[in-house]
Image (cartoon, rainbow, N blue to C red; front, side, top):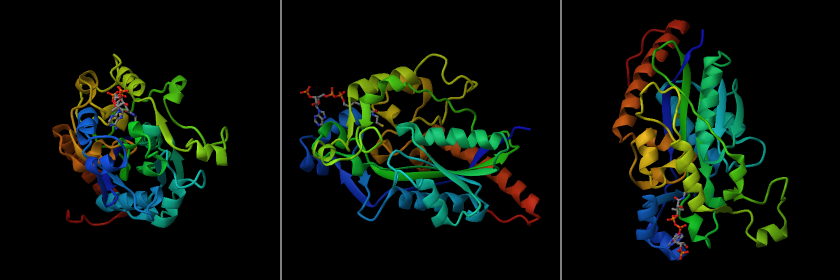
Length: 322
Ligand SMILES: CC(C)(COP(=O)(O)OP(=O)(O)OC[C@H]1O[C@@H](n2cnc3c(N)ncnc32)[C@H](O)[C@@H]1OP(=O)(O)O)[C@@H](O)C(=O)NCCC(=O)NCCS
């Protein structure tokens, strides 16, 4: 029988280095007023020298496992959604798996730009519902500061670094991840890209000199596309009237155009949770919006059900809640 996929743990890590809009004013020709008006962003976090996508993922993952009360060796699947992996390969997920000691887990990365985390969550949900795995550690993490051109004010003020993680488990409970709706339009790839460093345009002295290893974006066109696709009639198809705590890829929250917000979500007005960090985990952790709180409540109910079932299966006595 298909099972529900329930979020039983969540964790978040943001680097300690805070870069405010006033700091950005010293780097490029911009103002706090311009950034705030258009994006709501007041500050972002940048990784320090020794921090990487895998090290931040690890911090978030440990917190999520602790909250789910799951041991690393019981994790069956590790997925990292990222477009700024430590290496092209090995996968960042494999590095996290090794550092965690999740020795029985399969591990792979998902790269779908801003939708990487949501996509990874959808895959985990599918693999749990089909019975392929009983649990998954799903991480969204980015070190985008390493791909920013600090001479390009149209992009460098928008992105930041950090990681969020959730533990997802199979459950017979009636709560869980209801649906994951994905949509892509590959014809618009050039609107937001890192041109060089892949197989098509390998890194050379020339690509470096031309800054082709940095993020480039046509912001206005990306915004129009995001609004159009996310507010499209009929999406999401199977939410059965529930709208609260919908997780959107990060790009969708730029300016939160009323059409998208009214249709899909009502949350997170400020600060670094609106910086681009591979999707939804940060707002879940902060949980300030009413809908998010409700989802966390449902998540906790589901988590208790899952933990009780886990204890019954392993013959352990009930443990008091922390
Ligand atoms: C990026 C974004 C905030 C820009 O807002 P915008 O209103 O479209 O701004 P524009 O690009 O039209 O630029 C307006 C002006 O501001 C200027 N500008 C751009 N960046 C600036 C900055 N950081 N500071 C000051 N001025 C800036 C532009 O040069 C332009 O000046 P001009 O009219 O003299 O040419 C907006 O397009 C957006 O949110 N796009 C979606 C981004 C997104 O979701 N990306 C996905 C990543 S996850």
